[in-house]
Amino acid sequence: MDQIRVDQQNLPKKERYGIGELLKTIDLKRPTYYDERKRIINKNDKYADVKVVIKEIAEKGKWRGSYTYGYRRIMPLLEKAGYHMAEATLRRLMNELGVQPAMYNRRKNNHYSSYKGTVGKVADNLLNQTFDATSPFTVLHTDVSQVRLGDSTWAYMSVILDQATKEVLAASVSQNPNKLLIMDTLSQLEDNLPNNFNPIIHSDQGWHYQLEYYREKIDSLGLIQSMSRKGNCLDNAPMESFFHLFKVESQPEIKKCKSISQFTQFFNKYVNWYNNDRISNKTKNMSPVDYRTHILAA
Image (spheres, rainbow, N blue to C red):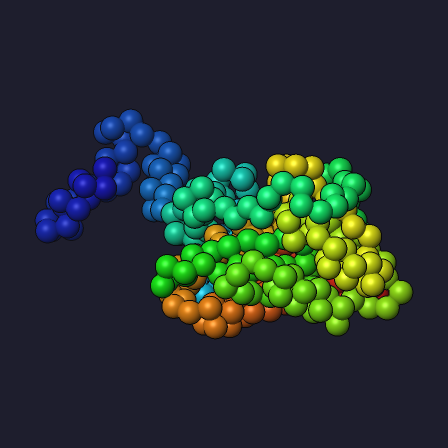
């Protein structure tokens, strides 16, 4: 139909067929014709408006040029903006826009294990995979992980995380997973933990956490020790989640770090961004610091 009209453009106006004549000839109703034209015109623009919003939200979640917001975090923000759609549709649109977060292969990148058997005292598992803390500074998690830098050396990260707010309360980096790394992390926690709080601190059965120096230090801070079952990483899921997110969101930048000092600076910046800017649907789409402030003010 439209092609016929195009072909007639060079003809004198008197010799052209009108739309009514053409529709009558092909037995097509006028409303059907215009509906079809509208559908064709708008076919590629059906999600044009929401794509703009998705892109804007995804851009806000960027960390060092990498997209970090998956569909679960974008969905509630879209709904808040007045857009509602199925998860499958959102994932498809994110894929079309190229704003899907990167994936991280845990096995390929050599997951760190500090387990060396029973070398000290193994504490009871007080949590039993119950991650329902709602008040800050009541349940903490800690662990050590590693990444390979651009110069092929290893960097080790020791972190303490608040279960309720997801806030990183202490973070230290070293070339070696030794006593100094663990003690520096605990010293930071001592500075950041308010008085009159005696939280549980949960770890795996890594050798660091079994030894007397660690147990004495957390006891002096009024912390209650808890440990995962042997070989069960899900018992310390909040820490696994944090390190996974860091590696997913930072892998390209990690490879650019050519020294431990360069990586330390980068990791500290990530922790600051994570605590103050990175939103999560688990914290009501607030950053960990904002969520902690929100809870304590309630």
